[in-house]
Every structure is written in structure tokens, then in C-alpha cells.
Image 1 (cartoon, helix red, strand yellow):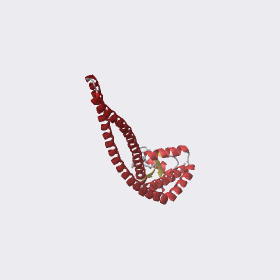
Image 2 (cartoon, rainbow, N blue to C red):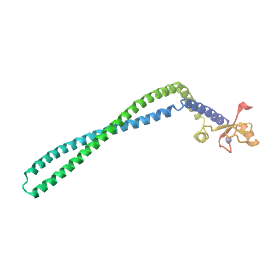
Image 3 (cartoon, rainbow, N blue to C red):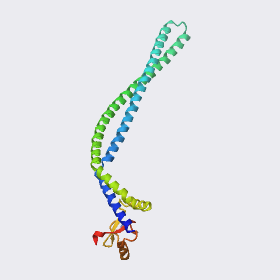
Image 4 (cartoon, helix red, strand yellow):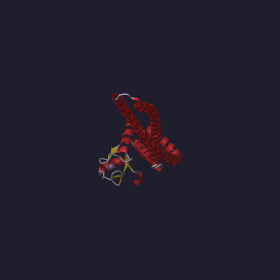
Length: 237
Ligand SMILES: [Zn+2]
């Protein structure tokens, strides 16, 4: 058991050093990730809006063709209007003329609306393009800084990870799992020292009998109030 407890102490030390390596990278990993996500969203939006502009332009062409033939038809009706013989015929053609005029109005309004939409989308795309360029520069700068930090500490990180693997082999899966569980629940500290009769993790007092038992390092004790594994601090002797 003594060996297990010392291995757990070792594991805790290694993990705290790994935490430090991670901390030195600071906010950079999350900043880089955030910029990347925003950048991807903007790029997708730009593509979507460009496609929409193309579609609006194609639709406008179709409408313009239709307008062209309606205008031809209108001319035809207007000529016919002068050649009619009866009132009935006149009314019929006048009615058709009104219908065509209304259709032409509607289609012309559709083209105006479509042009407005295209104008707004083009403006919006210019802004997005500007944002994308700015974000790309931000991304590159932050990513270079992050990669530099990673490579500066990667050697240390690899050494620590190797040490960790060696220590892990000295422990059972059950012990490692319990350690991990406490570590993630208790702010990264799974192993606490008994310092002057107090748990170094939560500062609660330990019964004197328990202090004696912990000192012997013969059994795995958990702090009754915080649940951390309690070990004896040799340096305090
Ligand atoms: Zn405690």
C-alpha cells in the first residue's frame, strides 16, 4: 500500500506540472478555436449570399424576357384598339390591355425589388469579405503564437506524459479511475497531505487517531469532508 500511495503522490505531481504546461498556453487555444469557428461561419454565409445573388439575377432575366413579350403584346392590343368595329370588341380589347398593363407593372416591381435585394446583399458581402480578411489575419497571428508556445513546451509535456505512463503502470485501473474522479471533482487535486492534523485540500481537522494511521502510510484513507486521498507529508517531519 505504501508503494501505491507514493505512486499516487507522484501521479498528482506530474498532473500538476501538466496543468501548468496547459496553463502557460493560456487563452490562446480557445481564442484560436473561436476565431476559426467565426471565420467558417462568415465564409459559409458569403457563399450562400453569393448564390442568392446569382439566383436573383437569373430570375430577373426570366422576368425581363416575360416583360419583353408582354410589351409586344401590349403594342399589338393598342394597334388593334384603333381598328375595332364594334363597342363589344373595343371593350374586350381594352380589358385585355388593362390586364397586360397590370402584369407589366407587377413584373417591373418585382425587378425593382430584386435589384434592391441584390444591392443590399452585395453591400453585406463586401462587409463579410472585409471581416473575413481581418479574421484571417487574427487567426494567423494567434495560431502562430499558439504553435510557438506548444512547440516550446512540447518537450516538457512529452517527458511528463512518459513519466505519467510509467507511474500509471504501478497502479490498478480502479485506483487510477478513483484518482481521476476525485481530481476532476476537486479542482485538480486528488491527493491531499495531512498537515498539522489538517487536510491540505479542505483544511478540515482530522481525528488524532486518523493522523497516526495516515502517518503510517499503510492504508488508503479518504478525507471525510472533501473525499481526497490523504497521505503523510514527509517534509513536515
Ligand atoms: Zn479534505
